[in-house]
Amino acid sequence: MIIKMSLSYMGDFKKSNENNGFIVSGKIIPKYENNIWSYIEESFPEPYFKQYEDDDVDISYINEQGKSIFLYYDENDCVGKIKLCTYWNGYALIEDIAVAKDWRHKGIGAALLSKATEWAKQNNLVGLMLETQDVNILACRFYAKNNFVIGGVDTMLYSNFSTAHEKAIFWYYKFKYSN
Image (cartoon, rainbow, N blue to C red; front, side, top):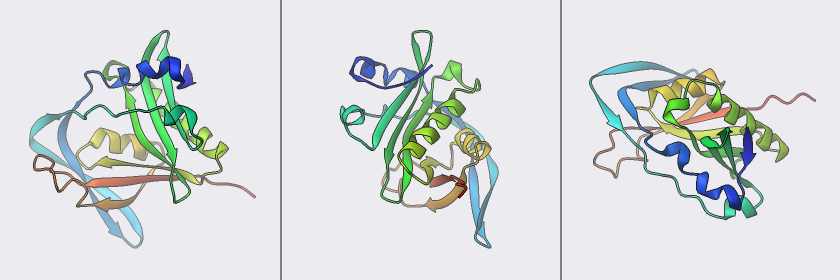
């Protein structure tokens, strides 16, 4: 069950991030040629563990138009979330998407993307966009599998953090509207 977050469900926002992290086993290497992005994967000789800090949420995602959070529940357990807002370029920006570790590979992420698509179309947006890191291979594979394409790479976004040896990858899914 996917519900729009309300004040009464705000406490569940961080539940899908509890104990989340992943093994970094390599990175994607994007290539831009003839106006088309592609990538290959490179494995690391020594994998390492990475965990993101909890994303913050505020009441604006409940009260303001152009912002929304959807929570995925299995029975009474919040096991996934997607945080969205309208972006200046006409896309819906996915600020965060997370599925609890034990619930991954069960279609929850795809269901959340479907809900984001529905929300974006209701808000007359042209598609979805998001950013992830080149070292998050599983996320990159997930977005590619769900028809996202690389739209750009930012080599400086994380450069101020001495422990971050990664590049930002911007992924886009543009809707096909028929006239």
